[in-house]
Length: 137
Image 1 (cartoon, rainbow, N blue to C red):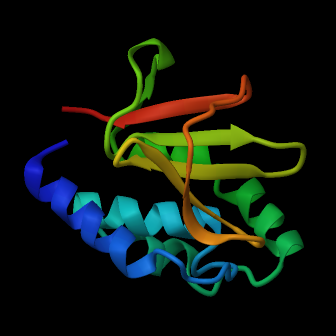
Image 2: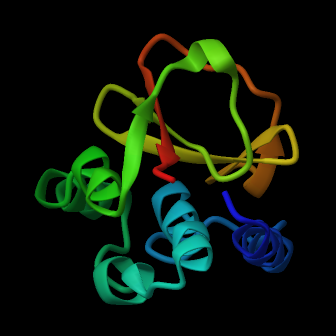
């Protein structure tokens, strides 16, 4: 990731850090989409996600229509082997039973959002159901 992209990501995380979980605004997928917009200088969150779902059920239905893995690859992110570790801007999608949870790496931590903790950082602990992506150079 380029230096200016790293700065934009840092700025976005600083603004969103600590915000409460809110579907289509600061849920894990919306949070990561906003970070990706900062990295790429795009408006995907505003166009694709904002106000499109307001409950857990509608979020799951949304993911059936807009597959997170396909979407992130359409933006130029490539599947990444986890053997080499993660760097700033890498995205980790974790497939849960009924939902895909999104995380982004920054500052040696995984950042995401949950109903319990809101937007916050977590130690990097990647489950077997995860797929990581890195922006192509």
